[in-house]
Length: 207
Image (tube, rainbow, N blue to C red; front, side, top):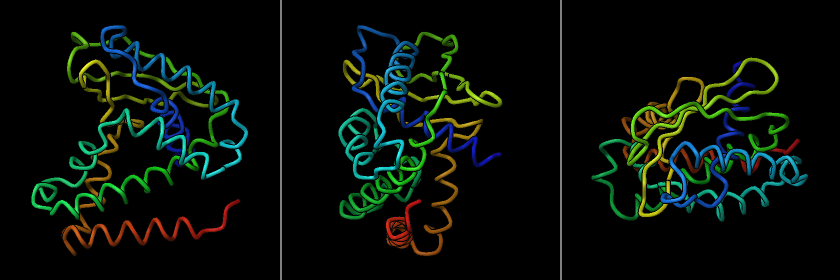
């Protein structure tokens, strides 16, 4: 049951990210999340290739529509922690690449789970300017799922840099996982671990 909850929530996370960022002067943070959630859930539901698990199509979707509108470097540096600042430019580049592949592999399974879900955006707390938290609730079969977003204003657009799934911020969850590999082998050890995991996922038979 817990696994289904996470997969469903991650699917909606991917869907909510996978559209061009809305103009800051046109919409507030909560309106941005509502707009992208509704638009992309409909798009994913209509895409038979994504629902069938076409990884190449999902990769294209993520590369073209997700990554440009997420502060992925901020997300990665937060997940790595203090060792990010002491990493070499080459290590940072490799870490960004492997973490991106990890996220794409996660979404490859999650996006296929989008079926009949809808998203309710809750009223904003505070001004909704600058760094903000947008709280939403994913509704479908079963109990509603909490799905919140940390967003920042980047020029005229909103960018997402963390997601709370069912009470757990993803950056903190990854930070806990990464800390073990960093303690054992430093940045190179973490990159090697992620590389091995991504290769194993790519080689695994697809259902």
